[in-house]
Image (cartoon, rainbow, N blue to C red):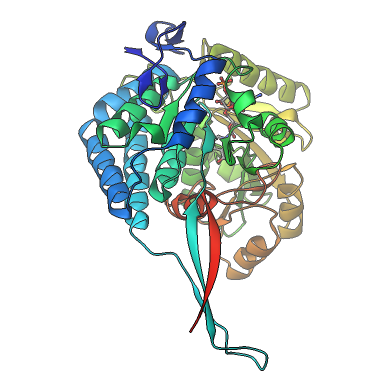
Length: 469
Ligand code: NAP
């Protein structure tokens, strides 16, 4: 597969970047690399503009893109799996999510979004009305991570295009092929070329100058905490949306349905090779049921076969590269030195890290204090709900959480007292629909939500006008 970066629809013909499979290191595709002059040309093309899109135009383009994703879901899934090492079944699931994002964005693009305020409603009022309307910002820079190579990208592009905001996309250099396939699909669906440039290239020539560029109105970034904070420092006077790392708990109370608890913990920890910002990264279990839960989770873990990502039977593919797997292996070893016990898994082969259950994990182990982006299931116990809330809130992150309980007063306390963006009762932390508000607080983000509807708001500003009435 030979792909190119694009400046407003014009292919970049320059140096070539090879994308290798994390599973067997074969070259699965190449992409041409843009440079600083391409970045500047992309800004100029977006600001020069072209045919202005009506709401119906935007609906039609997004709906056509939705149809094309359905037709091409196999080839998208194969590309996602080849470049990221994700199991093909996860990659296919991801194409379904992308379908939903495009469908919701198409639907939302048709809706009116203004408000009306009558002014004769107080003693000092008068006969006027104030109206609001949303206007697209002139240019968005969207920077995306490697995990979910399709869904992360479509979650930026679809809402921006739904409101008519031109985008410069900088996808991850680890998984650019899917992003470029999506770019080409959107052009094919009728998107005017000035509306989208997709650039891959050195950070110092593309991403950083664009983050700093005063002509860019908004930077929408999803990725690690370290890079997110760097971007916040560089961006200057512009809107910045940051969706950063997570360290999400699933909290299992003593009254939990045990089957559900085991299922949610395993799905949350292992799906997508544990590489979701909202993957279960800490399993907090009431001490009264910890022994039974732990045995059951070890049994369940045997179902998550890992290996060749292209095999439809594989449940857990690789992590993004061998270095990431080595990090996970080391973080497990370090927790063992601190007193933790590996109950199943723990071994690494190349970029494959086995689904691993670890018990007796100390509360200060690196594995649970920082984000471990892989299929690890560290178990920590707590004595009561106060302890569970304190333990859950004890890290720098605040993305999401899952609680397993049938006790409504427990559920209400977690909803009120967890310092996170989302609390899901009897679900994994990652549960959402693509249009619902999504995003974290503390180091996980600035509390500005994404999800199709909220992201559409981000890519606009509200204009207020008033008329005598
Ligand atoms: P990353 O290393 O932060 O990279 C993310 C993107 O930022 C990539 O496109 C990267 O480009 C680019 N980048 C790197 N340095 C930059 C700089 N100095 N200025 C501007 N852009 C720069 O993250 P990752 O490892 O790809 O992704 C995993 C992380 O994303 C995890 O922490 C995960 O939790 C988080 N995540 C969060 C959410 C959420 O919604 N909260 C969702 C998904 C993932 P290159 O690839 O070229 O380096």
